[in-house]
Amino acid sequence: VSTIGNELKDRGWAEQTDDGLVVSDPNALLDAWAGDYELPAGREQSLYTHLHGSALDNALLSVLNGPSPGRLILRSYSAADRIAPFARNANRYLYADQEAVDQLSTHMRLSAADKGGNLLVIVPDEDGVFDDAIEPMSGIPCTSPVQTYLDLQHSGERGREAADHLRQEALKWR
Image (tube, rainbow, N blue to C red; front, top):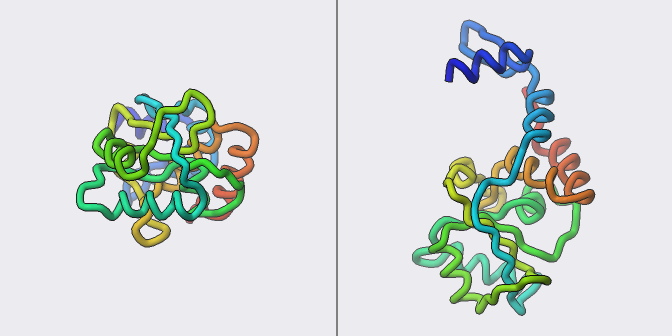
């Protein structure tokens, strides 16, 4: 922690105050983080279901609110759509553990899709993306605004536009 704090101070992104270490330039820190960011390591799965639109969302809600959903959160465009809507994307993007993927597969009759999947899941090697999940809509967990921003920055041109919109709407610093 001390090494990270010193690095933040050396780069001018944080300062030591009587209250402790305070991020003094969150925008520069976020820009640098986005420049070095890589999606969390894990297994990516492109899955297909015949469901779409509200039927797909209702099926996801059924799994999320089921008796044993595992760990499942919306990410990327799907999370941004709940936090600060901007870009339209018919796919659903998720982080999930294997238990949740199994529940989704059973409940939604998913099949693997080399191309054309409409449910894009990453089963991360580590659980960190789940730790700061938010619920902008009741019963729908999403990645945090910062995680959503980072994911969108690395998802193509529309993703960068959606990230910029999310940053303006949801990443306001004190």
